[in-house]
Length: 156
Ligand SMILES: CC(C)(COP(=O)(O)OP(=O)(O)OC[C@H]1O[C@@H](n2cnc3c(N)ncnc32)[C@H](O)[C@@H]1OP(=O)(O)O)[C@@H](O)C(=O)NCCC(=O)NCCS
Image 1: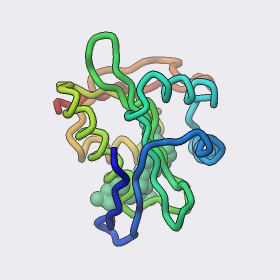
Image 2 (image 1 turned 180 degrees about the horizontal axis):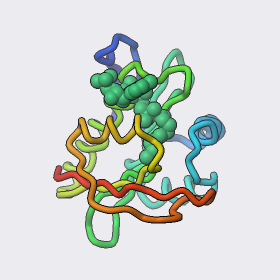
Image 3 (image 1 turned 180 degrees about the vertical axis):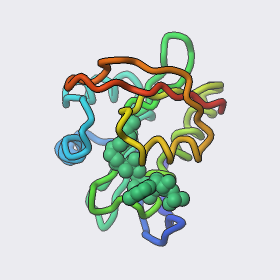
């Protein structure tokens, strides 16, 4: 994807571009403060599997968020991770990243997208429902700390 410069609905200017290797340090910082469960080796592996599925957001030349997409064996899309730097949450960045994720999957003629989200993560669940996801299941003990996940799915 060509880098995209846009203003979010809440008025901050961001640049979205494909992930590059030097971004990994910032990506891992944001993922750690976001209580996601990945590790850098896994992120790099997913990037190598599908580079166009890993996008980062910049504000003033610094990475403030990212989304990682995966193609499942069943031929669906999966949002493996989505996170925004704590200091930039609530400015519409997450919503922009999701829209871009949907478009990226549609270009690959993918019909469905799914994701897992912590049961306690009401903010993300609200965002996903407002973008057309519906709850389709529950996975107990999904996260390393024992928390369960809500499984959500959306038609693209
Ligand atoms: C989920 C997350 C990516 C959203 O990113 P964001 O840039 O803050 O999201 P946006 O500003 O686009 O807000 C989108 C919606 O999220 C909800 N939301 C965002 N911040 C909120 C807050 N502080 N309180 C309540 N709802 C909130 C609202 O529904 C909002 O929609 P609205 O602005 O139309 O009301 C971000 O909160 C995050 O990184 N969380 C930690 C990681 C995570 O939970 N990832 C998803 C795991 S599957």
